[in-house]
Structure formats: C-alpha cells, structure tokens
Image 1 (cartoon, rainbow, N blue to C red):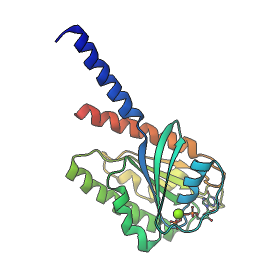
Image 2 (image 1 turned 135 degrees about the vertical axis):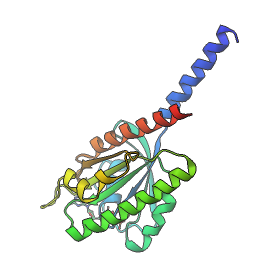
Image 3 (image 1 turned 180 degrees about the vertical axis):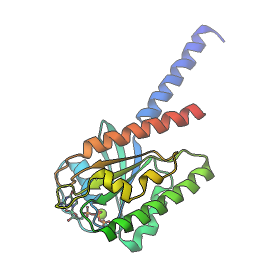
Image 4 (image 1 turned 90 degrees about the vertical axis):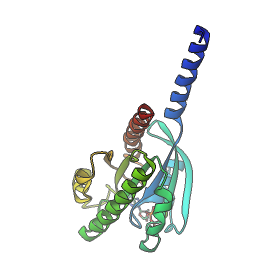
Length: 204
Ligand SMILES: Nc1nc2c(ncn2[C@@H]2O[C@H](COP(=O)(O)OP(=O)(O)OP(=O)(O)O)[C@@H](O)[C@H]2O)c(=O)[nH]1
Ligand SMILES: [Mg+2]
C-alpha cells in the first residue's frame, strides 16, 4: 500500500470516529406519571415553560443541550402504559429517568421498582446483543418544590449505587419549569455517552 493510500485510510478512520462521536444520541425520557418528562422535553425544545397534559402515546423532538444534539423520545409514565417503555428503551443510546424529588416515600419506592425493572431488562438486552449498557441519567426534577430531596439522597433511595459496575449512571438536580440545571444535567449525560461510544469503538 502506498503512503497516499495509508493517509487516505487514516483520514477516513478519523472522519468516521469524529462522525460517530458527534452523531445525535437517541435518548428516552422515562419515569412515573407527572414526574415532569414532557415539561423537560418542551423546555429543552422551546426554551420556555409549556403547559402539558398526561402523555398517552409519545412525543419526539430534536434538541440541543449540554453541548450536544439529541433526539429525545418522551413516553407516558402512567402505570397502564409503563409496559410500553420497553419498546422505546430497547436500542437507545441513553436513558433519562425523571423523578419528582418532592414526592412521597411511597412514590419514590414505586420509582425504584420501575427503575430496577428497567435496568434488569437492559442487562438482558445488552447481553443478548453484545452491546454496552446505555448510560442512565436520573434527573432529580422539581427541585423548586418544598421538601424536594437532594439528588444524592434520591440516588440512594432508587438503588443506583447497587447497580452493576458496567452500568454508567449520573444524578443531577433540575427544575423543568424554569429550566435550571437541565443544561448541566445534559452535559453530564453527554460525557457518559461519549465514554460509552469510545469504549464500544475500542472493542471493535
Ligand atoms: N413545580 C414544578 N412543577 C413541575 C416541574 N416539572 C414539571 N412540573 C409540573 O408537573 C406536572 C406534570 O408534568 P408533565 O411534564 O406533564 O409530567 P410527565 O412526566 O410528562 O407525566 P406523564 O406524561 O403523565 O407521564 C405539570 O403540572 C408540570 O407543570 C418542576 O420542575 N417544578
Ligand atoms: Mg408526559
């Protein structure tokens, strides 16, 4: 192979790598009903508060936040539609689990059960398809409300420290009504997504 050809191949490898790292990540917003998923999505998309109604199907928007472009899927969190989460989370690049930080101990426990169920499903999917675990961001939303729990407190209550080591996760505070914390949260998720993509690339 001539030097010119070597340079060409190297260039296309670098371009491929850059394209892979900068491609918009597909993410899914899940979490109990009324945790604020759609408010988060609309705040990211329109940069302002938008009134919502409970989501029956799904919403999908392209947004830019935390220094990255995202394709965001937002699905309903009511108990009867939670079985549908699986079809959205199957091949996603990352998961955002939105929690109402001001909710009762019973609701936090309900969120823990759903999050752990989701995590187990993801293990099975990733093992079956030899894929790395998509990073998980727990968004401790509604920090403006009285009695809102600290993100680290929520992380413990949801069992995040007990997740398998191969599961990258982060927790971040936010208020979807004002947008406070969302950009920082998405930047933290972006870091995890890039790390996962690099690991996947190095494995190939
Ligand atoms: N105070 C406060 N209210 C919020 C915040 N985020 C969302 N809400 C309110 O919480 C309620 C539910 O918000 P949604 O975004 O519809 O919740 P959801 O998670 O999409 O609910 P489902 O679609 O039913 O799963 C709405 O009245 C929002 O205005 C927040 O950060 N602070
Ligand atoms: Mg909704």
